[in-house]
Image (cartoon, rainbow, N blue to C red; front, side, top):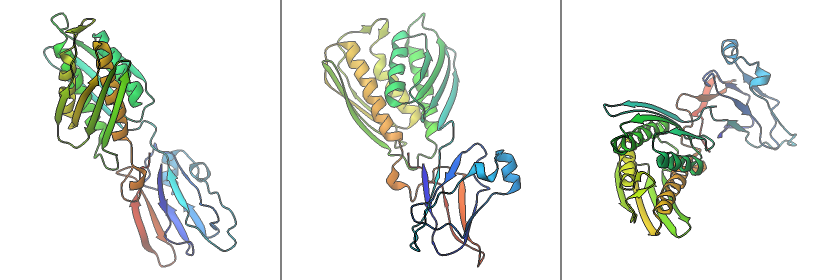
Length: 298
């Protein structure tokens, strides 16, 4: 949600909403004890026709009698329907990979990589990161899983980079330690734009099912390279290979979830939609009092 404030409770104001994206939903509500009697909402006929909404559907006011003591009203917007999305198709001589990632998803995974254990790990990433992840991949897994594992991670990192956009307003840092029975893995990450991986995993077996356990570090190295992430993975304990790897993906998912969420305390300075503005006008002197972007406060 984004919040802005009218600069004064004493003047007559209008809100010009023509720059709100066509597919956005929004609502306008008043803080307690603010008198809206001299405040009006203006939505041009052209914009109204493009939104397919009448003014009363597009926005509403709620108010209480303040007895003459005004409090600045808050204006809130909901985030776009689809959220922050990255979509990548990567085709090489060895693989054909398609990834779609929604950072503002609900934890839905639909992954078919040709590598069953990797599908299971991507399910954990989606569930614990509350991401929507769609992956379709085919490759030369008749030789081994190396190329598919690498290119899926490269595509996922690129999709993450796309979805983050300018990264403004996000927490940026994430830190989580996840246990799974006897295993425990700690992950620290920074969405800094500077790719770096430090990975300290001691996986005791060469394979989990058919999956080569050397590919775990290679997966994260590939993801780091294209996403521009600084990532530290530290194993605290563990003897079972499956548990160690799964705890790693769960800790990574939780740390990533922290990092991509928006810091509500930055709401006064950080834009939520780069092309969406609400402009406040003081109608009487016909000069702009204040203009700022909508702010994300997820």
